[in-house]
Every structure is written in structure tokens, then in C-alpha cells.
Amino acid sequence: MISAVSVGSLKTSGSSTVALTLASVAAAADIPILLIDAARDGDLAAWASRAGRPAKITVERCRDEATIEKLVRTARKRGDLVVIDAGDEAATIRLGAKLSDRAVIPVRFSPLSASYAVETDRILAKDAGRGRRTRGRCFVASAVATIPSRIARSVEAIIGESETARLPIGLVQRAAYEAPFLHGGTIFTLDE
Image (cartoon, rainbow, N blue to C red):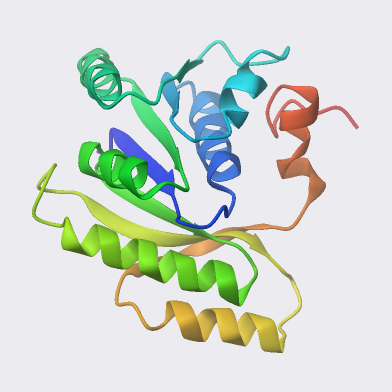
């Protein structure tokens, strides 16, 4: 069982949205979550201050390496799922991946985002022998379009340069994934 997931890419690509969506799905399944906001912008900490945070989700705002390691160890002992929003800084992305069972690299619907995602993958590949032995990494679409296009083909070609797995799912560009950051709660608790 995966007990820790890190989300991050060198280009802002929806790491907070993906991290919150993962945490929301787990909380809806009654799984306790520690959501670590290690990203520079602190979007998840701001979200946690709004009404509607599920009781199963605990949010810690932390950018210090030793504290993040301690939080992950403690949560693993409790049996919580840990989701780390590593943001877009290389050092934080590497730390999050080192502490996790799976590093998720979000990719937005743009060739620039895809290029940075592949670069993030290369950085994590260099660290493959460090940290948890069973850890893996994958790409996930954090904002896909429903209509195939030249841009979509370009993004696919760029990501195709890497042998790293791609999750066969993704978040479609919808306001519902951003609404919790504005109104609180999760995608499961949004009002009409």
C-alpha cells in the first residue's frame, strides 16, 4: 500500500490542485490524511483556513526538511496517508520524492509545462537510488482539454520522451477543481 505521495514539478502545474484532489478522494473514502504544504505559495494552508475542511484531512504548512521528515515518519506510524505538495522548487521536489512511495509529476495542457515535467522526471531519475527503495514516479495530467488538438499532440510527444509511466487519468480543465481554494471544502462538498 502506498502511504506517502509527493506532488511537484519545476513549472507551476497544478501541484496543489492534484494534492488536494488526492486528499479529498482519500478523505471521502474515510482514510486519514496528512497533507503537507511545502510549496512556496502556501495554497493548501490557505485552503485549510477556510470552512469545510474534512475532519480526516490534517494540513501542516512546513518548508523545513527536518520537520517534513518528522511529520512523514509520525504519520506513517499512525497509518495516515501522507500527501506532500512539493510545489515547483527542485530541492523540495527531491525531498518530497525521497520521502514518498510515489512521486507524481503534474503536467498542464502546454508544451512548456510538459518540458518542465520531463526535466523534473530527469532530476528525480538521478535520485532513484536514494530514499525509499520501493518508490516510483509518474506523470499525471493536471489540466487536460477534452478536444484533441495540435497542442495535445505536442504535449504527448514531449512526455513521450520519458519512459516514466503516465497515469491514464487526469483532471479536465474545470472550475470545480479550483473552487475549493476559493470557497473551502472539497470537490465532493461544493454547492451548486
